Length: 488
Image (cartoon, rainbow, N blue to C red; front, top):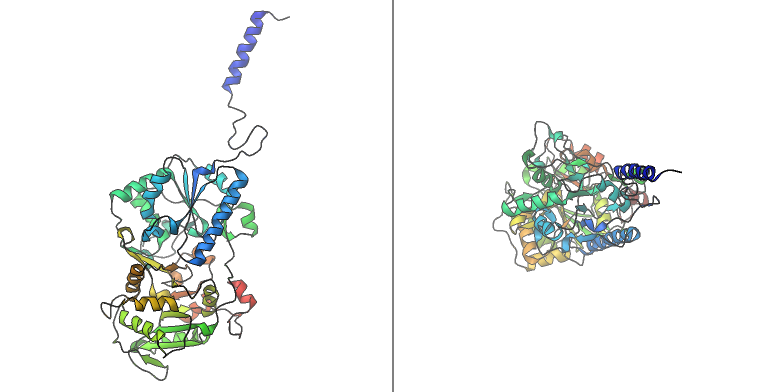
């Protein structure tokens, strides 16, 4: 029988080893039976990059409902899910940086991550929680799927011209995330130092530049689980925390009879640019007119009554808007205004427009911004194509909006007018102000684009055939057969 001294020695040794070992029951994320513990999802704030348009609002509400449903299956502590278009009345919120002080003030004390999603981004909540847990939430992190430029490009102001691939910026479609310490520091910077850039052109690149801060801030950290594969693909199912939905089919494509296309041109480009349109996409438009400073019956072009200008073309565009509303052209629901060096897929546009209500004032295209941090405005950049519902054109002209000169920038003047009227600009990433070469290869890889712009240093017919041509175009009035719809 052991003595009392032996018993005391045994227990001293036992307690020494017991308290020297790491806790066996505190393995992060699991309870004693090895089951995954509910996560405190309140530490994650989801920001859906939504837009003020009835179609996009419905998409965002569905996405929010899905996130909250997933969260309910994991924990009784749901995350915050914000719809960007309804956070405040500030027009510039979509450019993210002016929103940072609000995010810091509202969530800086009780949250760990701000996760930004586009409306087509699907989230697998358990997987995303696991991914974020790999990173120390008390440090500054900028997470995403990295993109890089193959060559220096005008849309990025030729940044990193010597080696464009060195700078990485996030593909917003895959989701991207900021840790709260980084949000707080950036918010203080936004408050203390005026944002330097007047123009917002490619938001994802400009946000990354601001965070990088000439090397003083964090680089983008690549997260392989943030993906742009389709939701049901094998790669997505096996490894991805985020994925992409199939592009929506909102109904039958808009009929060609409902679309009027206005092409802005001038005499010096009649023989250079107009033939490209005739070789590529003109045949897909039922109603199309070329507006010029010279009437050429061989094309034909219509002298719109405005002298040609080297830039801006505001007078010409407003003359087109006025003509669209008079009896000189067929009465259609939609007006498309393009440059003579715009390449566009009319069948794909027909599909996209099926998602929008033409009785609403819809202004659709690639959205840029001017002075958004100082109460500026958004506008549709003209080269990628500007799409207006008839109601939008009526409201614009009824407002008395007009050009301050014929060579004023037409797209920016229209943006100022829309802002004054309180009408939103609706963004689609499928319209492009520049050439395919000016965009990251991985960014275009998951798109079926609608337009590109500029013929500089390219073969525009070859570009159209590669990027915009649909070989499954039917001869029906809607322009596409079932196979072509599935492709988009």
